[in-house]
Image (cartoon, rainbow, N blue to C red; front, top):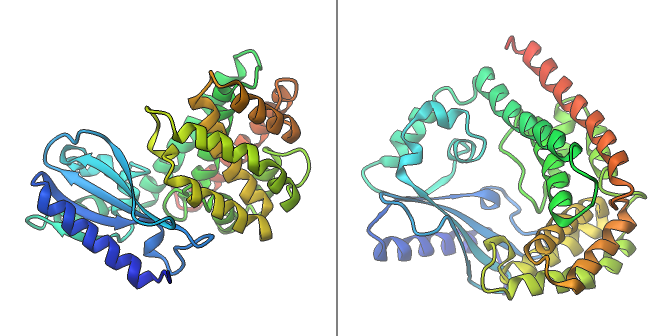
Amino acid sequence: MRITLEALHKAARESAERYARRDRSLVCIYLTGSLLGEEPLLGGTTDIDLIFVHSTLPPYPREIVRLTDEIHLDIAHLPQSVFQQPRRLRADNWIGSFLCANPIVLHDIGHWFEFTQASAGAQFDLPEYVLQRARLFSDQARQSWLDLQSQPAQATPQQIHQYLDILENASNAVSVLYGTPLTERRFLIQFSQRAQAAGRPGMAAGLADLIQDDPASLELIQNLLENWRLALQSAGNREEKSPRLDPTRLPYYERAVLALGEDSPAAALWLLLRTWTRAARAQPDDAAVLSGWQNACGRLGLSSVALPERLKAVDAYLDTVEETLDLWGKQYGV
């Protein structure tokens, strides 16, 4: 099947129409994410990111719906009430940022979207709001670092998940100075561009160094892939699971890892480690999954013995992030 941007947009429109016909609580549906760009495919796969706004409280916050092996819907369900205060949306890194990033409206009752976006977007790009959103990420990263620093270093899935959250939030603090927060498949690739824009080109390499002992390679990725796949398959088969671990997502992740591994193995490693740790954290009672994940972390220098030194390096990384925000603020008089 040949997948074009036009075909993906058609699938998004048809899906929105289908849901709107059967759910009268839907006030608005809009398309965001990679389909707003020119190259939504990575490894021949993509998701269609849809925001559903309901007049009532939706029964669940997120769902994954398979269309083909290569394409699925990733639907975020939000109550209309979260959009009621424009001032809060201007400081919101996720809902506010993607609302104001020129999404494509697929369903709208009573011009709700037009009014809401105009209210939130009027001052969204003012430097004081941009810096406020960046500092939210930076503060979250620093607080999580302090929390992890105070714990005995055990390199459990929970601790490594928290460690990766710190790196993601810290890097997004710089990223949102120049656009929306970065999402997981292209995270390290796009962060390199944002770090360049911030005048900190070395930060992307610094981020990569914090998840590996030696530079990543395609050979390393291929060696880790089998145990990673088994962990995600096992997590996807559980009755209760995060939508991120839905089995529909496995080809979406795997083909992206393989595609990135050719030209940017560090970016592939980031995606592999992020998803693998999520899967290990979701099934702490599975000895085989835990053993495979621990072996991988040991190879990358993320063992309980190495973690304290890694946290010292993260401290320096956070200092660089905080200095970057200070300099940006001075440049724009904030």
